[in-house]
Length: 218
Image (spheres, rainbow, N blue to C red):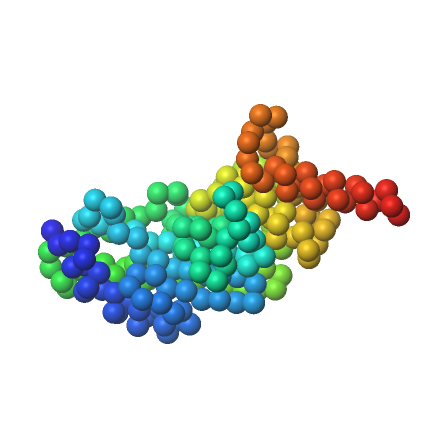
């Protein structure tokens, strides 16, 4: 079985050529795109034990600069730091592709991966680019059975808990639609126990408190 380095040497160039046709820039197995509101990434992730790889994509709203350990550097964000990281399948583990000893077979594997990007990732990415975008269309009631509802909308799995997603939506809407920010903040708080130390609790409380203060001044 060939190594990850050998598989990457064989497939990185044709992978890049294909991704650049769709407006992505990058090198190796990581390619990026940027819109006015979002950072977008597609990637092939090699197994740490070698022998196989999987693929996925990620989207990050530029307005979300906060993270549990401080401020994010939006201009140099790593893919694992993106807020919404998704597989190319309906299940969280994603599909794994095994490396082969034959170069032709490995190029065929790459073709299957690229086809999966086109079938699964690109349509979801387009939902972020359209207006209204997928976040604007997502209703707070969908936090119940969140993963099921997200997959129903997109056909892919997302790596986020319901309360983390509620926090991201609160941050996303805070300056553009205060009412929706409040709805997600209230829902997010309801998903936390009294002893939960989730860093976003303070943002939920702040958004709700600021709104209450504004109402009292009127």
